[in-house]
Image 1 (tube, rainbow, N blue to C red):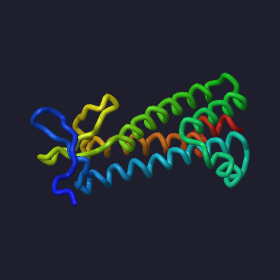
Image 2: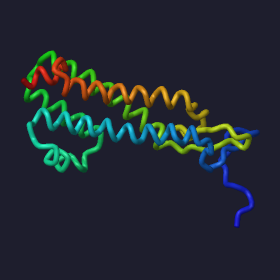
Image 3: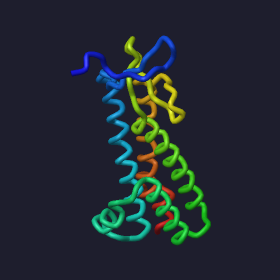
Amino acid sequence: MMSKKPSAPVSANKDVSHTLPTDKNLLAAIGTIALLHAHLDNALRMTIKDITGLSKDETLDATARQGSRDLRERVRRLAKQRFGESTALVKLDTLLYRAGRATDTRNGILHSVWGTELDGDVMIRREDHSFEPGKSVEELKEFAEELRSIIWEFIYARLDDDGFLSKALK
């Protein structure tokens, strides 16, 4: 059994342990982001349902193996076929762009290696293999609210009588 946790050097004076952060609020905030992102993908699937006129089950089966990028691209392609170059398409492009940025941020959070410095500070390993301080609980909660907002904008656009997709689909 190892007596010391494995670590990766950060500088001459610091090590980052490859153990998970223990702050339950931090872990809960990361979990919330993961769950909300699944809701974002679902909002994209339901947008495909509305544009195509397929049933919910048909749409869910047809998109079961599609990731976020594929879903966004499919929504865009179907919307362009259905609406042509239109205000609805431009508004949808705005939402799809924001959804893509949110997915990139989510991926940076969920697919990074999170660890702790020996003094307990949370660190994330960057793409260049260096470490940076992890997001705070407050930053993660703010991002979760951004995700929630995008999801509700898709729902409103589709289901509200004044929603731009709802109007375009009439």
